[in-house]
Structure formats: structure tokens, C-alpha cells
Amino acid sequence: MRVVKEEKLMDKVCKNKKDEEIHQDIIKVLAKITRIDASSINDNVLIRDELGIDSLMGIEIIAKVEKHYNIHLEESLLLEINRVGDFIDLVKSKLK
Amino acid sequence: MEGWREHPVFIELGADQKPVYTGAKEFQQKIVETADFFEKSGIRKNHFIPMFLENSVDFICCFLGLVKIGAKPIPIKLEYRKIELDEIFKNAQPQAIITETSHLEIIEPYLSQRIVIERKNGRLKLHQKTTKKTIPHELSDEIASINYTYRGYGYPLGVMVPHGQYIHGAKVFQAGLQAKPKERMLIILPMSHIFTLIGCIFVPILHNITSVIANTMHPRKIFRLIREYKINHLIAIPEIHLLLEKFKDLAGKLPSLKVLGCGGSLLTREDYYRIKNAFNTDLLHGYGLTEFTPVSRNKRGEAKAGTVGPLSENIECKIIPEDGNEAGEILIKTSHMFRGYYKNPKVTKEAFEGDWFKTGDIGKIRDGNLIFVREKKRTRNVNGNMVDLEELDRIAHMINKKDQSDLKTSLKNEIATYKIPFIDLK
Image: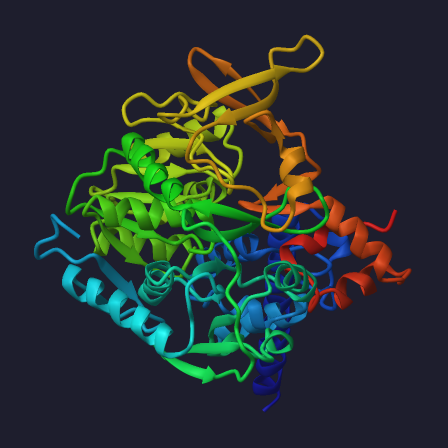
């Protein structure tokens, strides 16, 4: 019983670690493309208005993330998303 | 439409990516039917008609249908919001509007007392009639369309584009491209731009080249379309070619691709070689303005890196050197030039020196090729879109908000998003 509980705890730790890695990876991509310091990008930052991401930059971000995680994202998605955190959540949901 | 046989004029890819083929006869018939529909809807000669349409065969049929009945299409960028549209509607006083149904909400303040035609699920229908008597504008028959652009005055200017510019522009564009009948061109740039209208619509139609119309700029999808539809020519802006180069490992083999053409913004010598080496095709860069396109363009087999190529046929050009430098403002002269800015004689006068048009761009000529150096006017080119810094200064002063991020957020519904990063309260 105790072993099972410990395994579940380890799964959770791994999942959180993986989530954190995804989070950091995406912030790094955003920082590189926008040339804004990664330390100033957090979940609440507005993708277009504060990071200045236009449609072409948006496609570059999508293409990079797709390639890195081997997933497919629709171009139109970035139009519907406002904040960095929403984009990260979307990527995570595709990875599940 | 001579010279078209079995090969389609258009292959249009909808949201579901299923191809819809349009042959020459069908295309001609569609233009006639669209023109008839416009007349039945009350549109007349010299009515001004802003078009809020996505890339599609319908866009082209609407544009040509309006031209057929002598009405003046005004292709509008779908990104434009209130401040830009206020200026355009105030200047043009249009009698009718053609719009995607999805765009009706954005342009709602401009619909009153105008004929409104909507495009819903790929079909045109009369959305709204008007009881107001629609008096046509007075305008010369040689004008084909009004295309809005920025020149650093703080508001968009309505460029009166003559028929000759479309025909002559397509002819000199083709002289550089040297596309052959039955070849295929992929259209990804917005059709509202004069560069797309001439290079990606009139060139293929007049030279029997099939246009594959897609609404994507995603490298993976573009590579797939090039392979699947055996695309020979891809016309874009340098930024898109650079994006494709960054993802070249997704390209696979692209044996059909012969030419990458571009214009609208700067392409450095280094970037030229990056793109050319990645795809091993001709890479043709050119230069033009809404007032006349193309002023110059590179030709297949003779392209020179870092230049926008030799001048187009029937165009004269002179450089007014600045402070003893080799470079200076580019002045051009051609009989196919625009016919002035609509209802703006003052700016029209200022734009000319005698019969020479002052482009507001700095360049130089070396070994017969034009080299674009920078913009002289207070504008910035962002991914092929002209941003007028004067307009942004005006807006920043108009909206009295001290917090910059708040100001930027509040501007979302007022101005095209690509302009917002340039707003600065300092």
C-alpha cells in the first residue's frame, strides 16, 4: 500500500517537473522570438499587446513548439488566445 | 481569357483544405454574374466599394465585377480597426460595402445608409438595401480602384490606381518572373495589397498560370502545398521566405519549385543567400509602392543579391543625392503612375516635383540595379505593412492614458494590431 502511494507521489512530482519544463521551454521560445528577457515574461503577460507578437511571429512560435513537441497546433488558435499562460495550457493539453 | 485549356485558373483551398477548381469559362461567367448581381443590388458606375474579403476566388470576381461595371473597388486590410476605417470612410464616402459575414460586427458603425453585400459560406448575398439616393462620385474612367496607403501624414491616403498600372505592372512583373503557361503559383499574401493584386492575381490570369489560393503562412503547410500541388512560383514578403528558411528541414524535396519572388520590405544580401541556398531556386526581389508597382524587380537567371533589380520597362528614375552621398530620394516617372490621392490635392502636389513622383524612399543605382537603402518618410515597414508613425503620435496624444500597457490594450479595437508595438508615450 505504502509503495503504491509513493509511486503515485513520484508520478505527481514527475508530472509537475515536466509541466515546469514545458513552461520554461515555451517562455524561452517566446523570449527568443520577441527578443524580450525571459525573466519579464510570465503567465499573465498579454501575447500581442505586451510582447508585440504579430501574425508572422505567432506562426514562428507555433511552428517551433510543434517541432519541439511533435504536435500540431492551428494557426487560428493564437488569435483566440490573449495571455502567455493560456498558450502554455493549450500546449500542455495537446501533450496529454 | 485566351490560352486557357483544361488547366484551371484557380485551385482554392477552403478551411477544410478541400480543393475547389475553377476553369476559365466558369471564371468568366462568375465575373459576369457577380457584376450583374452588383447592378441588381443597386451598385453603379463610380460608386466606391470597400471590400472586406478574405483571399478567395470571390475576392477576385468581386474586384473584377466592380471594375466591369465601372464601380471602384477599395480593397481593405482586414486588420484595420476603427481609427483607420474612420479615416478611409470619411475620405471615400462609399455607397456600398462588400464584406465577409464574420466581419460585419467590426464594420457595424459604417453600414448605415449603405448597400451591404455579405459573403457567407462562399456565397454573396444582399445583406442590406438603402433608401438613400446613392450619388456616384466624379472620377475619370481611367481609374480602376482606390487603394489606401500611408505616407507619413498621419492618415491613410486613397491612391487612385489606373487600369494601366494593373496591366503594365503585370507585364513587367512577368518579365522578371518568366512564368510559363500551365505553371502554378501559390497565393498566400493578402489580396488587399497592391503587390498581391498585380503579382499574384493579374500576372497569373494574364499569363495562363494556375493560382493556388491558400489562407496560411505556416511553413509546414506551405511546404505540403508546394509538394501536393506542384507549385512552381511562390510570391511572398522576405519575412515569410526567411521563416521558411528557418524551418527548411520540414520542407522535404520540392522539385517543382522554381522561383521565390518577394517585395514589400527589405531583403539584405546575407538573407538573400540564406534563402537561396536553402531552396536552390531563383530568388527575385523587387521594389514598388501602391502609387506604382513594380518600380524595379530582379529577373530570372540575372538576380543580384542586395538589390531590387533593374528598373521596370517604361519607367524613368532619378536619385536626388543627399549631402554628396551616392544615395538619395528615389524619384520616378511613368505614364502608368497613380493619378493622385483621392480628395487630397495638397498631398498630391507635395508628392510630385514637376511630373516626377517622390517615393519617400532612399536608394541608389549601382551597375544598373536599384538598391533600396531606407525610408525617408516617417513610416516603418512591418512584415510588408506600412506603419505611419505620425498617425501613432496623433493617436497617443488623442487618448489620454498614462499607463502604456493600458493604452496598448485599449487600442485593440481602434487600430490594426501590428501597429500597436510602435505606440510610445515618451
